[in-house]
Image (cartoon, rainbow, N blue to C red; front, side, top):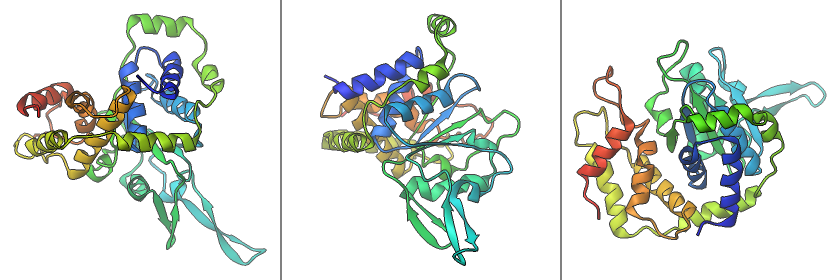
Length: 306
């Protein structure tokens, strides 16, 4: 049976983001697993709204960074400004110093600006002007990006992509959900009226519960075999990294918690696998397009269940 607080959180999100139960559950599972989330889709399908709703219902401090081609790392991290009264430089923290950061249209910034997130996402700290400063807990980055074939985008490097635990798409709503959206209340007003369902401290406790979900040795063998299988296929530029294996196991644990269980099943791993591999497995032929669902299905079929 699902925890009541998780049930209430999902109900609030589903009232605003209509007809997207699975992407919403994946998003919440990613945050419960202490991961960062990448949402790639066309403009106007609700990517930014989802980030706002998550921050509201989880009671998190929220900052939005609009990535542009002229952005500099200091615009994200912060800068020291000289104070004439004290005769010293004082550091003014940038928007990265927040519990949830929305990196909106991240692939419209240059690689130099994108790289400002690397240390923050991996080590939850920022080093600026020779000083290392811790980021708040909990800390999440939710990044949105437009499809890479659109004008004015810069592909994210592999080192940046691998720091995102999951990549999801929202897609167009089905006709019934779109009809309800058109006839219903204004979504921005609905978001503004949301109240937190939990506190940041309670979210940290839920993360600990997710981390404590039991994964048997056979289940861990299954995750390891899935990752190893991708490293033997010539169709990929590179197989899944050890960080990807850790991400797969962590999100599977959170997925089990969302389902009200204290142990991980192979079905949990299979359910989250497409989101883990979507941005990590790149075809050896750069011109080829990847059907993530088909790739995940083929990988699941190729690796026997424990």
